[in-house]
Structure formats: C-alpha cells, structure tokens
Image 1 (cartoon, rainbow, N blue to C red):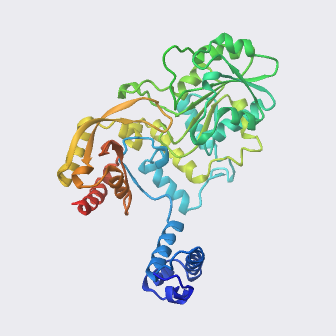
Image 2 (image 1 turned 90 degrees about the vertical axis):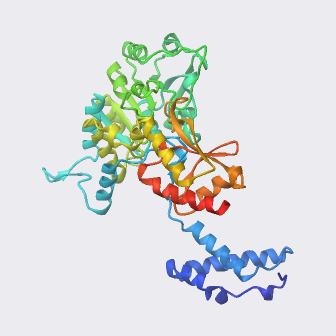
Length: 458
C-alpha cells in the first residue's frame, strides 16, 4: 500500500477493467463514471488524513458494491421464515394470485378506472369498491384511501375540524411508524379530550366530557397492544347508544380489518367491521393489508352523509388509492363475496394451514438438508398490528449454528444474502425456520439457499 497520490489509478484505468465495463453495459457510462470519481475522491481525502492509498482492486470492488446498493431494485422478494404472518418490515400481506393478475392487467393496459363503459361517461374510481365493501360489511357507503393513517386523518379533518374528539386515555396510543393518535388529531384540526385512566374507562367518563363543541367519540381497538389485569372499557353498543342520545357521531378505528371470525382457528375473536356497523357505529376505519389480506389501503365504511363529507374534503384527492392497489383490493374483496378467503388469500391459507402439513414440510426440509437440523414444536404469531399476543402452534426447523462452527448471527446474515434471501428467527445459538409463513412455491428456493450457506460452513 502506498501513501502517494500518484499511485492512485486514473479514471480511465478503472473504467477499462472488465468488471467495470460490465457495469457500464448494465447501467450507463455516465452513472458509473460518477461512482468511480466518487471513490477516487474518498481515496484522496483518506490519503490527506494519513491513510494509505487503496489498490485498484479495492476501488473496483467499492464501485461494484455502490452500484449494487444504489441501483438495487426494491423491494425484492424474500422468504419469510420468521413465523410472523403479517410482518410489517417484510411488506405485510402477500396478495392472492387473482389480485396479482388484476394488478398486472391494470399496470399494462388502459382501464375503466374512472370511466363507465355502459354510459360512456366519467365515474368515481370508488364505485365498485363501495359496492363490494357495503355488501360485505352492511354499511351504507365507503371510501378508500392509500393507508389507514390517511383514512383516520381525513375522517377527523372532515368531521371534527376545530371540534373536540373524546378518546379513552388508554386508547390514545402510538401506532406503526411512530404515528401517535394525539398527533393525528392535532394535524386534523381536532382537539383531543382524554377521558378515564390508562386501564379503566367507563361510559360515564365519555358522557361527562361531552360539551357543545364535541365533534365525535373515537374508539380505538387495541390491535397492536394489550392492557391486561384490572381493566374496563365500554363496548361499542354503549358508545353508540350514548352517541345517538347526544347526536354525536361514533368513530371506530379497528386497525386490522378482520372480516372473518378468528375463533374457529384458535385465535381470540378479533372484532370485525361488520359487527361494528351492525351495532350502529357511524364510521369504521381499517387497513387493507393486515387481516383483510389485501394491498396497502385505508378503508372507511359507514354513514353515507359522513362518507360524502370525507370524500369531498380537499385532501381526499391527495390521499386517494392508486389504480394498482385498487385493482388488488377489488380482487381481494371478491374472495370474501365468494366465501373463498381461506382458500385464496395467502395469509388466511397460512393461518388455517393444518399442523400435519406444516410438520410434513418441515420434515421434508430436514431430510433435504440433513444434520445439524431437527424438528421442534413452536408457535407462529399474527403480527402486523393484529391479534396482539395471540400465537398459533407450529413446527420449526431448528439449525444448530455451533455444529456448523459459526454463530447464529453470522448464519442468519448468510441466509439473508444471495438471490433468495431467507429471513429467520434466532433463539440462543439456534436458527429457527417456520414453514407456516413460507409460501409453498418458495420451498425449493429456500432449500437451495440453505444448502449453499451450509456448504460454506462444512
């Protein structure tokens, strides 16, 4: 290694290397030239600070890594072997084949997005989704936005701007991504009125807080947290009765958007939008990419007069659902209309997957990979801000990293590298792979990646 500026290779010398020429063919001369110059600038600054001059191979490798990091197509497919069905960091709900086909058709063709083919005139993109959502939930009307945070914000902005919104202190919480309910209320122009205590709130607390400036009562389902022990909260029937008596709309943020009774699958009952609508709730808010099993979206169903106010809000266009997510959501909703959700929607296929099938898949993995693998009992979780604390029995493939003369962190990292990254769980020095959350068509890719990683440690 040299400390001489003159020993640094020139731009042309680096560009002439066959590895860099390959990058130029893949991207462009200008973009790779910029990366080369950037690396040389870093090298010169390092030399000025007393560091040694890098060799040409080091610079070429750095350019390759930067090109891969800068222009890597994202998101890329990964194999979710964590056992978390709705893994927020991994994109939550994968779509059904029918939903994927709808997205492809909407992406590559013109469509009747906002056009009525029968009448030859403009039509709202919401109309077909509204028909399906009302059919499924029993609501009068609906409107869909790009995520549930936007839906809640717009609902509050349209209905409660410059008014008070009553929320139980135990529900004034933070949701995903650091978004806090009080902050959303503030940004919408509403004013938060906390009632009750963290663990116990009564209907009388809500009633005592009502004033002439009350705009709504907001109930937030604890879809991503639990308060246990000495607790109490009024049910929706009580809140709806109070709202009707005081002529105040009752808003229900349900979060997970579960349209199926979860009890038959060994999971505590998750409140459903259709139940809230039946109780008389004015508006119900929920996500499309959680237990509904569709694309990212924020759905509002309920009173038509209130829905119309929200749809006409100036920010509604800013937050509207795009055509690709709309296509995916429509196809996902049709699965519910056809009563085929557990057969077609991937997350419900995972949740309802029989234990013997999971054990069989785990055993097939073990037989293909050999020792130091074993099959153990374990649990899967729902995740994604849904059914907090609930687990489902499963079988896990356990890898002892010590038998491969490495450690669990290194082995987990190696599984995440390559063309088919595997995201796993770590417990002590064991790597755990849960078949429940691995799509069956990914089994072969999982084995290829795992075999490649194991071969490096044998």
